[in-house]
Length: 242
Image (cartoon, rainbow, N blue to C red; front, side, top):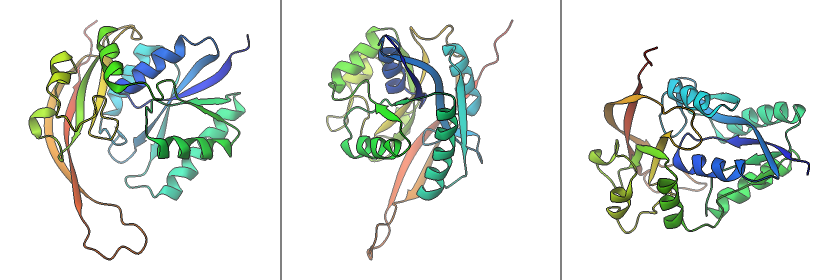
């Protein structure tokens, strides 16, 4: 069987880790590259705010080639798509035909990815698609993966929530209106150990901060702009002692 040369859109979190785990067991695909977007102004992973050094330590422990895609501090959608198209075309020249994601049930996002990649003759694949999220988070834990909350919406959580380890107690105490995998953007994580990792990623918990953003305006918006906020937990790399 000919395997499809695949790159994986790596977010550093638990869903990415489990999706990659599924994909590596699928004989149809050969995962040869991880790609991650990084805010070049702060040198942190986009959205999650994870330090670039921890991303690099993570991909090194996974033993898979990694590409870091630099984005400006506040890229427009046009700039984002321009940068991604350039990088995807570079991957195409290397023989990649498929692109994998850790999305679970957000239909609009899936459609956006599929339509944009189809324009570049790349097929999008979703190893976790439509699997029950409660089942997924329990499987993640039972397989031995370990992750920590690095970003959480202030709509659902306070400062004490970031920095928590994902375990069974964590799941049992989530608010009922929060998806167990945070698939609606309620929280984001950093996966630091598990069956895919050659070694666990050492780190210590740093400062916890709150950041507030303007809600993106839609066409013909006349109402006053609303705010939305996130709590972030900084994770500080610990250099290994040789």
